[in-house]
Image 1 (cartoon, rainbow over the protein chains, first blue to last red):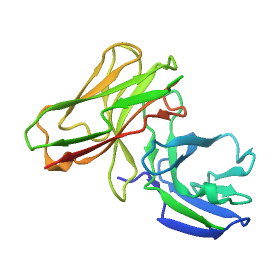
Image 2 (spheres, rainbow over the protein chains, first blue to last red; image 1 turned 90 degrees about the vertical axis):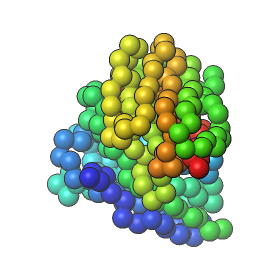
Image 3 (cartoon, rainbow over the protein chains, first blue to last red; image 1 turned 180 degrees about the vertical axis):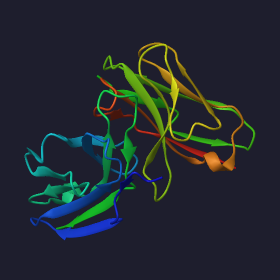
Image 4 (tube, rainbow over the protein chains, first blue to last red; image 1 turned 45 degrees about the vertical axis):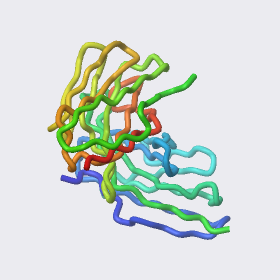
Amino acid sequence: DQQVKQNSPSLSVQEGRISILNCDYTNSMFDYFLWYKKYPAEGPTFLISISSIKDKNEDGRFTVFLNKSAKHLSLHIVPSQPGDSAVYFCAASVLYNNNDMRFGAGTRLTVKP
Amino acid sequence: NAGVTQTPKFQVLKTGQSMTLQCAQDMNHNSMYWYRQDPGMGLRLIYYSASEGTTDKGEVPNGYNVSRLNKREFSLRLESAAPSQTSVYFCASSPLLGSEQFFGPGTRLTVL
């Protein structure tokens, strides 16, 4: 059962514009949400996270928004840069619990110069 | 600090052969994980170890065994490899269960 879904396999944006990556989840027990970035032939690297007690978290050009009622989160990258081109995975977990982190299938972002 | 290291980077096996994937972390993390990544799918958890001396099954444990050798090392063993185990395997560690995880570079395994 896919508890975390990223419905867009790919996204292409122009350099300098906003990139918006979306993620939906089904398990209402999840209380911690994360985004990871993955370059080819490398492991995923942690990008940004948000706790369920917040609805927004910012870190430089990256902002994650959480809509608990809709069970939806999104990652905004502003402005997008060519170096942001990568696969982005959304993940959700129950913090401090036995491991229940589930990953989405990923969205490949391409930022064109 | 090397972070999370994995060996080997690539491996080709024949059906029925066995092998062990090695993983080590130098961040003093308590929890360690093994995932597999297949095309069109997210990372799926095979096994995890919440702390030294404990291991638990994840989402897709069949065909695998693990050993948490000490706090640093967590190995994954395929006793009798099958073509369905062709995948990219990632090891990860985290300071706490459910918190952000730090991943190794992966092992690309092909089973013929």
